Length: 300
Length: 265
Image 1 (cartoon, rainbow over the protein chains, first blue to last red):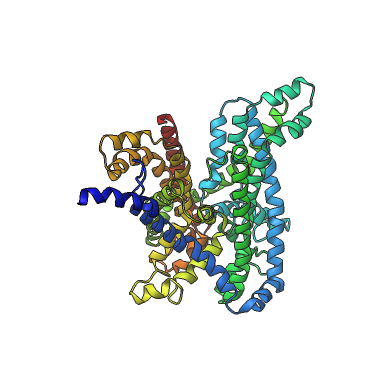
Image 2 (cartoon, rainbow over the protein chains, first blue to last red):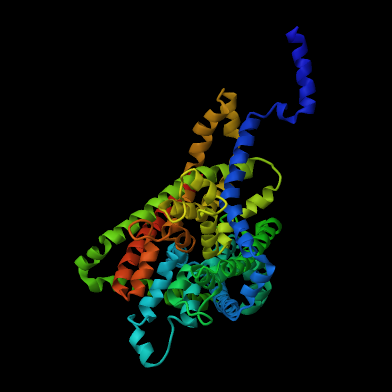
């Protein structure tokens, strides 16, 4: 009785309940799939999604009006301006460096190349606080040049130059490390062909090299910019937290939060969070559209 | 090919000015205390405790991330489910979200009136303003390192050996433990080490949730800032040099590990 009905039932079940389809030997058991997916989604929900949600919900806890007021008060506007200014200096500097470094590393052979690549990566493995500390040790009041700067009435620490230096340090490798592996992969055949046809150095660079690396360059600049605008630890060491003068947006968030002005802190934080979301969106689009031209297989 | 001299000269100049000379300033500074003074600075109870907390919490967070990071990477590579791309993009959030923003968000979330903190407090567990809060922040900051290191390797993982194992009668779990995990182990170790290295030096996402009680929940980077505020430059540099030395050892170990992994493939 059972032997004759069982196959029939199974066939019916196969059509109606996809879970009971026979699975390939390398497929996980459906229950394992459900369990692991649930663990992954809950973990990401708890540790990533909920903090993000908290930022916006706390910012709007007392309505749009309060959040908007916090963003339009003079100190907040100064902080936004300073953040934009610092990024506008630091990002192009590191972009030019990234192009120069990847050009000499990818197109030429020389001794110590691997050491150079390793050295470029150093700022990624240094604590943000140490990244700020090094500049205080040089330019701070009791630093190497502290006395001289003071005698000549120049200020680097607790002023714009220090903030820019610390930001340049922490975002130093972003563009270079996106470009170097890609340009090594691409080799130098096309540039040599251009040179044979009589193109000069700059026109080879702008007409041949740049079009080949444009998406990777944009990708690196995008990540560099996100970090430059969001850097906290390194900038915190060199800034001095002077309201309306040396406070970047992340520092302004800290000052407001420690003042128990939570709506203000989270309102400024939500602007930074929006910037992060836009960065992630553009980054994902670049990865889907131009995967081959980014060499994003190694994401930092 | 033109431009070699110019680009190399600029690269070396910029690298020296921004990275190498400042780091040299750090390495030279603490020795004005003398050899004994340096060690007295490092072995002071408050510094030792901060180092223990930074390294201990980073190790616990890295261990948690190695387990959950593997699960997340596995699910993202092997399974299909709704909003997979959104979840995938969200994994990068800790890279993109400024650490101060993450810090105040985690702090609000795990405080005794927060969405997660309130129910936990009813159960008698306190996270915010304790060393557990430090671990929570470091889990947040380290997760993408494990997931993003594993994903490309998992994608390239050939299913042939899994099929062979199944043919030979292995259960799915045996296949995972004996075939898949050993193949992934070096990559998993690399990702975990990267998460650990990042966590040791992390500042922004930790200080808001940690409470920063000396000898309880005070992390090493914060101690550097406190010493700087007291104009104890040499003391701050001494602690900074220890952190720098550890990150260099890690950088070298990671490079060796990656060389070893790619030589095996």
